[in-house]
Length: 231
Image (cartoon, rainbow, N blue to C red; front, top):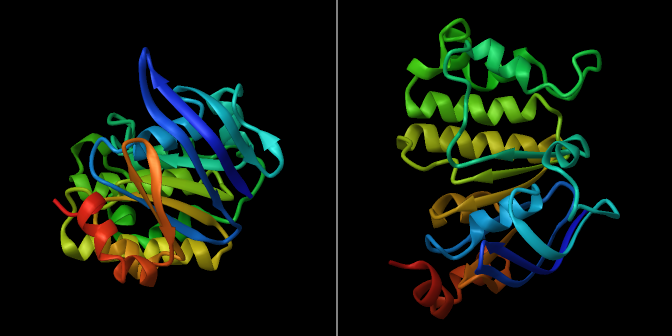
């Protein structure tokens, strides 16, 4: 489905990703773990055409490198950045409608689905997004991406700064995506949520993949956890 080979990425003259390889299969949750600065977010941005890169990023047989971000999104990839990037002066409902790629074509997700998954959004549907709490904005960003009906969604640090109860809601939300056949590339620092919901875990260090395996493999690999994950 998504296959990345020898991915190199740059910010100006700074070489950030060094030959990254990994795959995400249909209906799979893959967690990309690592410390801050390891290259995880850069990998997500490279997939979405937001940084200079070369190598190969294949999506359903098509090469993504060289395509513009909106073209990549229309091919069925969704992206939830760590910065959330909601439209603060628009209401919750207006933000959700803006996530739709084709207003004339029904996708797998509706407004009712979003409100059922996160009842707080329904309570706030006519509220300007900019006055909501960080947790509410995170819910909104996740749901807005889903309204575009992606086949794979890349989610960067969805639990950052959230209360434990909201973190559990996000975990349930991601598992619901899998049940509906959507693949997830989850960028996380928290091992707990990654171990709980992932099919596979990848660990990045210094711009390369240093581990690939199941959550159980990672639990049993004390060296990788100590060397590349633990603070």
